[in-house]
Image 1: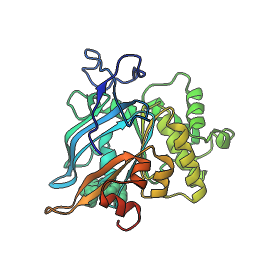
Image 2: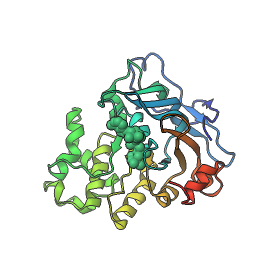
Image 3: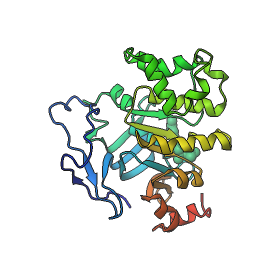
Image 4: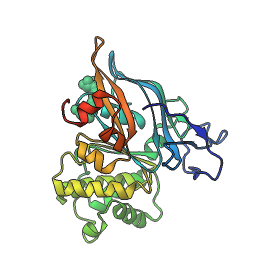
Length: 301
Ligand SMILES: Nc1ncnc2c1ncn2[C@@H]1O[C@H](COP(=O)(O)OP(=O)(O)OP(=O)(O)O)[C@@H](O)[C@H]1O
Ligand SMILES: [Mg+2]
């Protein structure tokens, strides 16, 4: 299901995201948060990303086509689908992470709390500040544990209360107890699972609104994977989370909603497209599209 109808929220229905300020026009035209009525059993959900007819290209090659969906606040949204269907391209488009790739471009709209992420007036640094990202392979800097977490706050001039900020980020990433006595030791001495939680702490240190995770557990053993999954359940109360995963059990365990992408091979190019988007239970138990059914039952992809 895509493009569900939206209605404006009355003030008081949802918390106004007063931390959000990414565009030059923001002060002049504050945006009332929008919420979408889900199925009647669901609470009203605030829209964080409103993605409209988005396509993404690497040069002449179209990686992703005509994607329309809304991503909601304080839940986990999983992105699943076969290799090459554009999952990474999709989440990297949400915080302009692909801007440095020559020839990369996005068509359509990616609205973040009503702001066009790709509009000329939008401040790219502020987009990254609000929308953090963690990658497949843990990539700590060759610095101390403390300096890894303090890196982004220092770069952004957030020097007041830095110790508290580092402790908070490590606590939220469920790593504080394991590292509090070795903060000055190299991050490279941590296990793979600890390194990935450190990367999550590093992303959380500047208190983003959204956390994007591209297969964050695929390089980890089952125990470290379980700790990352547990973390998702805790973090979603503070952050909006979008996670790409190849692991369908993982999507079923952690995600409230799931977007299934597939490859459209009807044209000259293989283009990734959104096939179905719904509550995770529906995607796994009662998918509407046979392609989703085949994929989640392991018959395809
Ligand atoms: N930097 C790039 N330059 C050119 N083409 C790219 C680039 N990154 C991805 N692509 C192409 O875009 C398409 C989608 O790739 P993407 O990495 O988004 O898929 P994916 O679903 O994340 O795959 P995987 O599950 O293997 O990680 C592929 O055809 C890929 O070859
Ligand atoms: Mg990928």
